[in-house]
Length: 220
Image 1 (cartoon, rainbow, N blue to C red):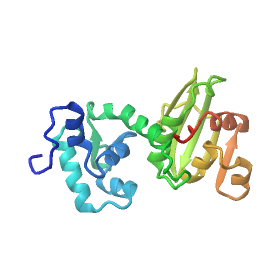
Image 2 (image 1 turned 90 degrees about the vertical axis):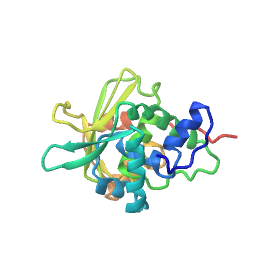
Image 3 (image 1 turned 30 degrees about the vertical axis):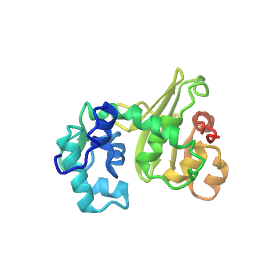
């Protein structure tokens, strides 16, 4: 950590920025919120990051005790994961999503990767809209399955596991198409007709789910 520049400021916020303020650092955290990933998976999720920069950022975050390395069950190999302390960054990251989407300069509707789309749904879930019947949806985004459940005004969305209950409906699509469906810029019937989405199960349950997200207005 001694080779990094520091604000040399006694404020804890300045120290936090020393730890996660470097380019790509917080996006690496974003990619690990939903679970551990291998180096190659991180590069895929981050797109434009170089292998050298990713290696450097991972080393810095590990030295800061924000991430740890762990062995996945066979044949997974070694992967990176957030430490318990690093996982405390999730509400901060979600608040950044809610704050950043209100920027007058933010380009709405631009493509997102799978993890970024799922986290945006955690950030932009509207509890009032989710106060209706319990709803269980299976989302398959670029082949990756996620279990989503809305109950008592709360959203739980995570990578699907063997213990997850059967869904009422399944939506298979891309993250970008889901972005437009969930935030009101696309009609599900049009997405189905064009082949951008496949739906099975109870359509009213899916419509309830897609109606539980709200994008705030841009800041003045």
